[in-house]
Image 1 (cartoon, rainbow, N blue to C red):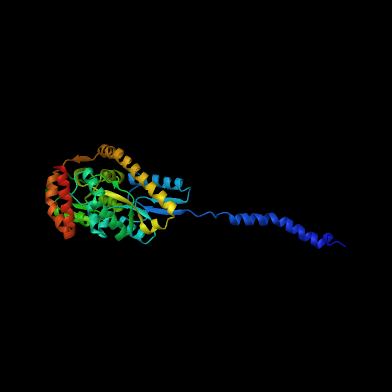
Image 2 (image 1 turned 45 degrees about the vertical axis):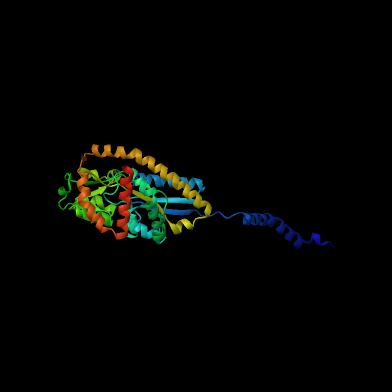
Length: 341
């Protein structure tokens, strides 16, 4: 009798026939590349969601998602939700978060960074650009990368810093013990002490409440920061000291950057350049608008004796620098003076 008619053999062949499509599906599925989980970067911001820096990072995140086809995502956290500025640097170094914007506060890690926000050094954005694109700017970026572990991606112009208060300040003599909040930057503390004020280092997220409660009496920041933080609600005068012309760096931890696949590194750096251009356009459009808004909100703009402020603080600022940094200071002053002759 032919075995092909065996009930057991028929059942076996039927089982194989039914299972074969499933086997082929398994084989082909195994050959397909496995879907990769997206890489998620976290960025901590000291500014709120209305500020140009935050808007630029949101734009950056959109570019990364689109150009990487969802493989690289950016999560932005405004108003120091994740960390205050100094803490954010340490969290990036520890690999807990990935990105932030930062500048002179890095002076606490490397002294050359002081020159991105040294009081009464630069006059305008032309001076600023010469520093950033020259050898001093290159030294700063090298120090950030090699000494601090941060990769600067571009720079955002801050706009001049001005003093706000509840009494007009036209001359250093008007300060007379005024309690001024400053970021935790050595040169800022030195400058305001030399002018007769009482500088108090404090995280930016604590400033509004401290002004409201009278713990501090004044603070200093660019127009955009003053507007975004709502300081017009607790400060009457905006004294046009323009004591600092400065910038900030959008940064990523170098370890985090190097961990990206090569193609995503390229996408990331190209998108960062587009973010820089986008932010600069926003900054230019915003700078005049925020001044008008602050005036409309009741702030009185006060013209000050800028030269008196500069002269009263110059020696103290210079003396606070190390000998090596004094040479850098002299080099900057000499080069800027020569170019303006």
